[in-house]
Length: 295
Picture (cartoon, rainbow, N blue to C red):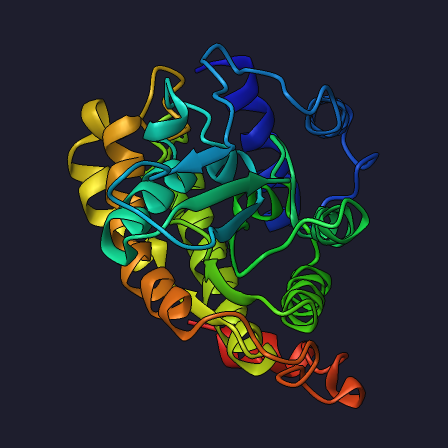
């Protein structure tokens, strides 16, 4: 087992058993190390390539018209860690497929970051606005680091809700790839793999509830991709045994594409804020949401 896997195991164990960071010497040290790792260099490679997740696709004689603007937000899965080129990332595959299907160029933007969790979404959304990046369709991939870091689920889903609301207010349609099934990570030994699966699935259900409330569309990666990632780990995972391989990303993009295409065909939201939920409801994701999300 690698050091990073051991650190994740310690973090999960601490939360499941209800330990505080300082309640046990060895366990507390593991948790502290994991926290330092998670807040380290944002573009740490984990031993694999980090491709550039931006560019324009379909800018040739086969396409015409104003480019569609697709923005990627979230964690390392949105970045494409484990892929070797931009074209192999989820964003690149979606942009390329959209350009072919729509017959128009697609410009891909990315503010996703390695190690990001739901608390980082606010900054990513703000970055798009601050740099005046037009977004017609936004794809958020988030949840793995919330699970492995045992983030407070109520806080995590509330932040996701706020991000979807804000993106809708900027005129974007929003697609959220919910937390993948972390029970497929073979470096986690039992019973920790079982606990990781349970937590990630519960988070995915809670994410689905709040995304729909916020006016976005949720796509369940765990339910759709978990079985094949478990059956075919050598081809679905990259060299670090944690991030997807190019084939794994191709599968994820195929699952997301119908929802992304439907959003792109609807066009940009005419009036920013017209589809935004009532501001009085922005604190709705709470303990009730978690109760609904219980398996």
